[in-house]
Length: 344
Image (cartoon, rainbow, N blue to C red; front, side):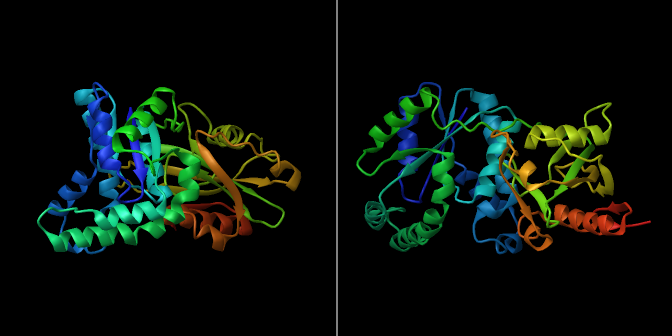
């Protein structure tokens, strides 16, 4: 199990985590900052200069999961992880990665009144004996108070909150331990195993009366997506598309699925790629749309969007696939793509 302590920089996560490990037999302290330090030593300077924070490195997010899974295999017991994560898509990627390895996550937010938080940061001696470096750390913490405030709506919805304003680190740790024992902070994310070979997947585009397309927001991976999923062995792709719509949205397409695009997705390690099919599932009336029911462990939201709005939500490979699917729908004929580009 992972006990992930989130919160603003300077909220006392590391101190509380060490206290929690001290009186939690079998637990291990796991600091993902060490992963970031390692990447700083190994990655070319040019790549590091392209990001402002090591959390923006896909390698960091993947290594956090891989390292955590390896530690659990090595020592067993829960890992206590003090780490600020303010971008929801990074939370999805990391927690979804643990879920894919069948490792449950308890998400705990240490929240402190901002006035107290600023006092703690100002008094903090981050690097003993190095005044300049300590001041740099304090400035970093203060600069991230605004991103923390912006992230609070989804954090409060996702995590179990412990108000540490008037608590000592020991009291905070005791509160967390009691809450975790009672199941607080549990992230019920669908356990989607990582592919071990190329896959065939079927997605379904559903439209409203204004020709906007329906997208869903998965809890277990970053970015929005089309309803759909991997075709099971021996299953016809159209059946898989209908099955996924029923499972994800709680409704059945009113029309037979019509093929729009076949897209060969190039393998990009660690991914394996494969064939991606997009089908036209027809229109949803306003009455039918009101019956959409999402599985909380898999999807957190859905919405109808224009093509322009989809550009703000979809990763590039899915956006390209959508754009060609919409052109195929207009032309009344399916298109074959390779890596998102028509060919043949």
